[in-house]
Amino acid sequence: MLLPIRTSIRPWRTPYANYAIIAINVIVFLLTYTGPTRYVVNGEFVVTALRLWADRFMLDPDHLRIQDFITYAFLHGSFMHIIGNMFFLYLFGNNVNDKLGSIGYICFYLAGAVFGGIGHALVGDAPVIGASGAVAAVTGAYLVLFPQTVITVLYWLFFFIGTLEVSAIYFIAFKMIILDNVIARITPNVAYDAHLAGYAYGILATVGLLAAGLVKTSGFDLWTMLKQWNRRRRYRDGVSTGFDPFTGQTAKPVKAEEIKSPEQKELEDKVRRLRTEIGSRITQRNLSAATQLYLELIEVDPTQVPPRQYLLDIANQLASENKHADSAEAYEKFLARYSTYEYVEQVELMLGIVYARYLKKQELAIKHLETAAKKLTDPGQIKLCKEELAKIKH
Image 1 (cartoon, rainbow, N blue to C red):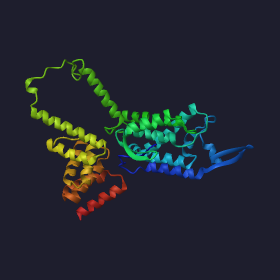
Image 2 (cartoon, helix red, strand yellow; image 1 turned 180 degrees about the vertical axis):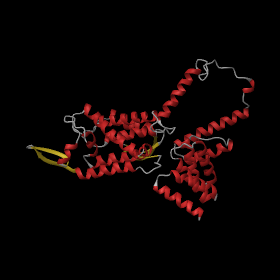
Image 3 (cartoon, one colour; image 1 turned 135 degrees about the horizontal axis):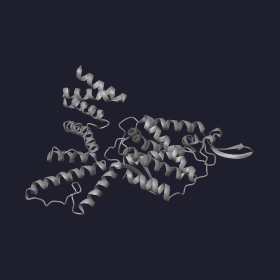
Image 4 (cartoon, rainbow, N blue to C red; image 1 turned 90 degrees about the horizontal axis):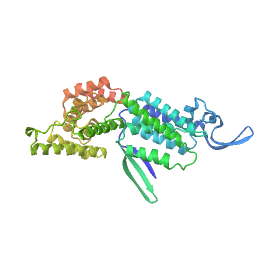
């Protein structure tokens, strides 16, 4: 048995929309669930886990109504049904909510319910309830937006119990989609086709949003991975014919003065190795090791700047390890290179706090805190920023 229990990332903003959706599902469940109960309807005994009045809001492929493509997703037939769906929605939905924004996330979730219902209605004939299709859509979106993050999985087999870490792209794609919904379709009364339709919608819609620029790419999402793979493919095809793929001309022989010295080559190899190892450690969520490698890297070449999320993780780790001067330098480097980052105000806030509390550079602290105060939207962060400014100025 494999159960994902946490992911390696957390949302930058409080995912209010996801919390609200979870709360609504729980409230509706408490209002509609009675446990298996026998009713007499038109002279016949009917057994249902819902209150009789709630049955009309199920999605019945034989009697389709437009509103049922939404209402069915808020009904659940048991405590395990609601707990399972809400757990997965909490696990994957918080970060998707953070990325899409509250309004976008709500629309995305409801659309996932609709497409999940359509998938069931096209091939199924039994009435269906549950948020599984919508949750599958959110999980598919997580796969696209955060494929390189790490999922901690709890496993147990007889007396063997433990945890392992798996990349999100592999766990969701192979375990949750292919194994659970294509190969092992053995559990009765499970709407597998609603799940698959939800996953398909979540993946395709999110890739479309990234491709159209409606959702900002992070540089580590599936769309970026696909573009990088295509660039590498085109480059390999070009150079294999003896032509420079950028100029369309035959590759020129290397001149003597272009040959690098052994010292230059050794330095470049070391930089390349350190950058590769930093990426590997961050992917494994071994931030302490990645931070130490980063410090080695900038000692070798101070101009080196890791990818955006790598550098931000390293700066945060340096701050947590009380290496405040190094963390401030990393934050400054981040702001200089990635000034268009969507949550740049939060980086300004962190840098301002480091300068104010630990490095005693009050002018720099005021500069960054005032910049952050103009853009922050989270009430807690705004309060923290104003309190820090008040301490400095008084």
